[in-house]
Amino acid sequence: MRVISYLFFILFLCITVPSEAAVINNIRSGAYADKTRIVLDLDELPKYSEVLSGSQLSIKIDADVKQENVLTPKSDLVKKVSLQKDGQGKAKVSVDLSKSPGSYKVFVLKAPNRLVIDFYRYVISKQVTEIDKDMHYISWRDYQNNKPVWLHILEVAPKGTYELRPILGKTITIDKGRLSAAAQQTGAFAAINSSYFDSSKWIVGNLKINDEWVSCDFTPRTALVIDQAGKAKIMPDLYYEGQAVAGNGKNAEITGINRERLAGDLILYNSFYGQSTGTNKFGREVRVEKGKVTEIGINGNLALRPGSVVLSGHGNSAEFLKTLKVGSRIEIKQSLEQEEADKAKHVIGAGPLLVSNGKASVTAEEEQFPADIAAGRAPRTAIGLKADGGILLVVAEGRSDVSAGLTLDELADYMIKLGAKEAMNFDGGGSSEMVLNKEIMNNPSDGSERPVRAGLGVFRN
Image 1 (cartoon, rainbow, N blue to C red):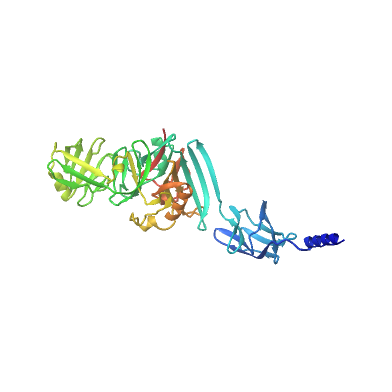
Image 2 (image 1 turned 30 degrees about the vertical axis):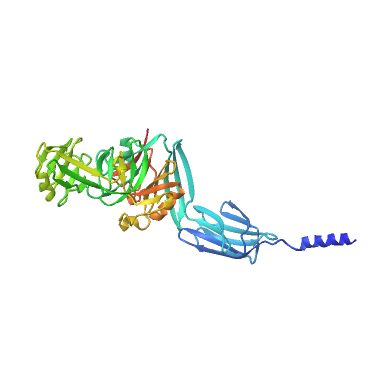
């Protein structure tokens, strides 16, 4: 009899004493420019499940409800939110939507414990398209610090069927041209914009193509260096030093490559600049071929042709050139002060550095970039190198409703998420563009392609 009484007592306890469950203490909502947020405050984190059916999201939660409630957020995404009991230790949240959100997310947060429901105005997605075994295209729509972001990513496998080569706006000169046209004319399967450039005929940065100098930069900055075997490396602190050394022992510093000649300059011109130097008569020019002066110009605007360079001087630089005559020996010395870069087949200077050894390392201040590049959100273009040699080409859209752009720090974070061990920034803003198989993948912030002076092409071997 005692045993039976004891069993009845245990059964009574099991029936009358409920198991402990989380408790929903409060429900609240808020509408923001990019999303509508619903928050449930709990004493502990619960288990939950969610079902979206038509215009209603239902979330079942393993939790007691302190007080049922109905909210009507001031939102064009959400009409009504209902919190109800759904049985012993159970709750149900019903969200009636006024229109389909771009995306939504349900997640929990700790300290304090909350269940959060975000309805985003824009899409969050990560779509991967396999181009072939050695190339993938990724469209990544995300939020960064409550701002929508749209990234276009091209991932190229190491030692595969592709190689990187710089391309020019007009393919053989630094005149501005559309990247899509340059890619098609050079045979590049894909391309992104690369170097900075000025409104005058000038690429701002160190640029070397097939061992020939196209432009130079005297400020130590980061560059993509591609060796004779096609292996890419990101190198910081590259700066140009050039000298013209005459056989008579006199020398002069080269102050620029393929840009407008200013007072006191000694500019080196070659056929990448165009058909002629475009200079006036207030200076002196000499053509150099195979280490010798072959022509002297006193009226400016000397013709440019492959196989020779023209030194164009004004002021003291012109006086140096006056010591030369046809047949004079002259040596042109040029260096980036790092042997690996000097021996490279291609050099594409831009910057700043974004990632070093797998960690964020944004060196905009050290590389002396102005605020219009270094500060704020903008469309961005970058390249990253993975530990296995894989290549990441990234273009972030900006200045639009679908993408606010990225800061340099945010761009560095994304490059790390994508697996970059090293990464650097290229020119951005309206120049940011990705072309893939003759298609423009991003929406340029100018509303159409901005003509550029240089890009980076991806070529099939």
